[in-house]
Length: 264
Image 1 (cartoon, rainbow, N blue to C red):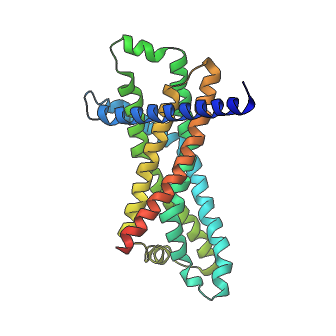
Image 2: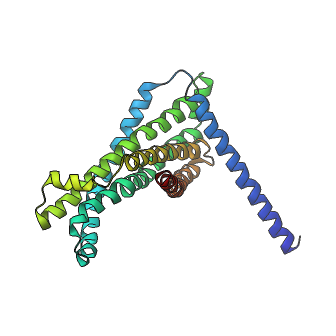
Image 3: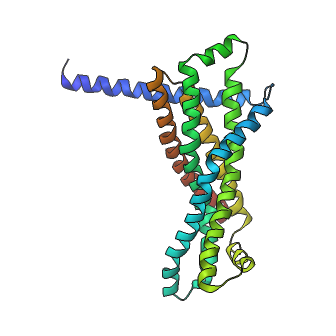
């Protein structure tokens, strides 16, 4: 086999593998929307997973959000001082955090903490044949393991994003108060002065989409893990990388859609 023929064969095989994975992911996502409306609903498991997701990510989100608020305010002040517009600093901080940084930072943190945890947990259950044992026991493993976790991330991550934005705004307030002794009420009034309902709706919608993506990617990679413990580690790693990549793509698309709606 010549080198050119071999390269074409490798390319064709890789392309077939890629589209096969895309088809599997499409079927996996479609099955979620079919199963989510069918009983039993496993509400207890959904609540437990919400608690797990929130508890694991809350400390890191608290620290990260607070630091982001302080650092962003410190970095923005010199630029505004050059134009004598330091009074716009609370508005700038509010726009940046509520519209972009809060949901995006929360999604990236949860991609690393929650996505990898779900991928590793379901991956270990897959390679140890626990999922097969659930099917033998007349339990729908997709319904119990996947649907509950995706619902939990879709519910919890928007709440965490709002919490992260609030903590970041408090960090910004501390910096502004230290420089200008601005009151808390005045700071938040100025911060939300230029934020519309569409901005908040877009921020919450982004967070829901991010949460759904993180949960779905983590479950998909874990549910299709193979090759023993090595496959579990690979599933966790791929869940993090793919979830972060999709979060950035969704950020671009949703922001563009929101801008179209604003102009119309």
